[in-house]
Image (cartoon, rainbow, N blue to C red; front, side, top):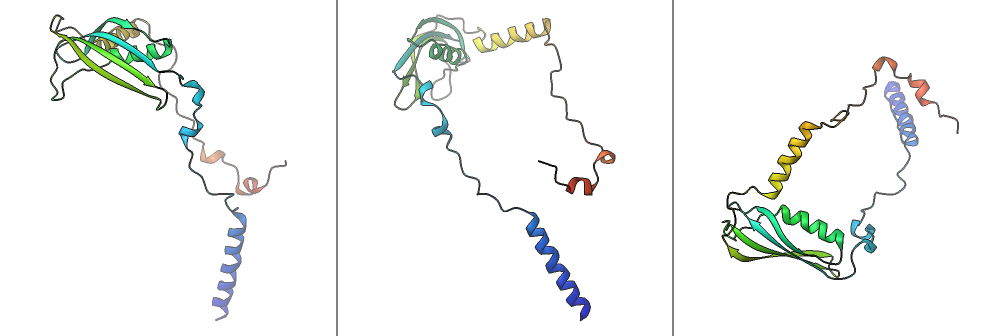
Length: 179
């Protein structure tokens, strides 16, 4: 009986120390609304409209941009130009028609969204076996990368693993550093 009572007293004493050593959380973590944090000043305040006339190959890839009707916002034009070069244009059933298309990009400042529309100008009249513009750019980048490999390591070096033999002793860790 004495052993059980002593064990119960020791258990209660150590559990009180364990809870006293761990601080209570200041406040529970709160969700962050990213849309509220984004500065609205970086978005254009006016409606923007860009048109591209593109050639599409038999796979539906944009092979080349023929002409551009730019907006008054060069960054928007650059972003939509990159998107137009990477576009695939296909019919709703998944077939591709080689030809000339008009790509429309419209930005609405109220919704801060860009809408893209496609219109067929003329079926045929292009090289159906032409490489897609994005594929062609990737091949050029690969060739140039082989000519001029980047200097320095390509991958991140792993952090050194601490040796167990060099870890500090427990009493040394438990000391509070002077402020």
